[in-house]
Image 1 (cartoon, rainbow, N blue to C red):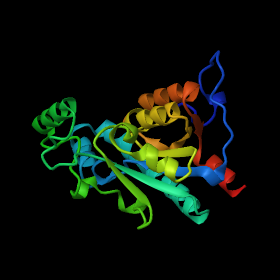
Image 2: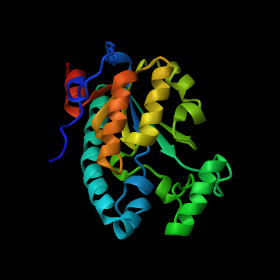
Image 3: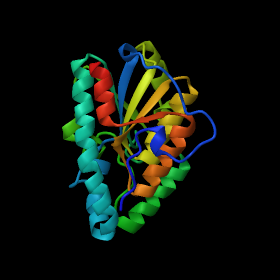
Length: 236
């Protein structure tokens, strides 16, 4: 039997300290879509075909997951656009084709990945794999931020841009829950933003990692909501 959804403190493990508490001014809230790119989230490019061939059990879970989380992210996109709220996208990958702009750890990881699977773990800006999946494509007046590290707060000027746009709450969707989403959520919270992570609009490769990341975030850094809860709050 699968574990219950994580979308409120009540569904997380008992905790002796206060949960993150804040009020959301939706006029100052923006949607941050993290790394839903072809290399990670397309079924015919990048990572998924390799997983399907070599690690079918991992692929079965992950593909099933993104087939739910991408449509939920699309619902959130449509709602934020309808309400004329800000939408921001990030793309993760090398800024230079040879990857020399990555930290050495990532360069080594990509080199090892090429030896094991004939493909890197990240693709460079300008490649088809680096692009956002077609279902979630950004509009011309929406900000797309390219980063070469897990969190855009470490690798880009997003903090200044988001403050310039008058945002105080960031609603996070994307992948992977326990990697770029979690790191971005922590960094945003430490910079004073209200952070909401949308449980059924974020994905990773193992359910236990997904739940562990959200449990950790929900204790200190973020509120964990469902897509329906965000949509209801926006409409209200």
